[in-house]
Image (cartoon, rainbow, N blue to C red; front, side, top):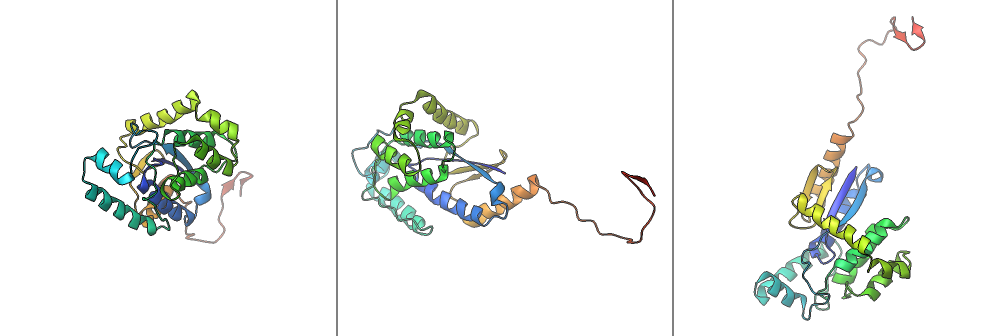
Length: 237
């Protein structure tokens, strides 16, 4: 089964949704037959490499809301993060453009033997938990190195027009299929799930799509077990 997931490194619900989806996948009987591809999306392509202010100040400015409303939004998402074992640190979070982080992910996708989901986790953790700037090449090189990527290869990828084109192609594909928010999950290029849904919903979706795409073999009930004349590959008897 194929699952494509569009998400942004700078999206708090994407980390929560990732945890919930992966919890459902871990309990799915056919998990070894599920191929997950992490695809890129940017909520704010115009965000500077490093915003000079707090996340609350950025949200208030970007969304045209009050600082109090921004703080309330942050409190809600922090509470939800804790339900999946995540402790977001918005006091030290660095609002930063995620494009280079997506380029690192695409390098990971291109490189055999690299666990892309683990690189994605590390990027999300850097942003929401460790207070690191996900636009900083040194931060991205360190993340890549932890997962087996060569330092020079990472630095080259961060300036590589071909890799950037792949990232932008993910953005275009998202727009073409009507993605307006993330996380966004597409199963078998046919079924869509929007948002950080409960684990139970992801589990139901995986089972439903599997049953539709991989129908179970028929089990016939024998009406009469006595031998009777029949023909087979060897002839008739």
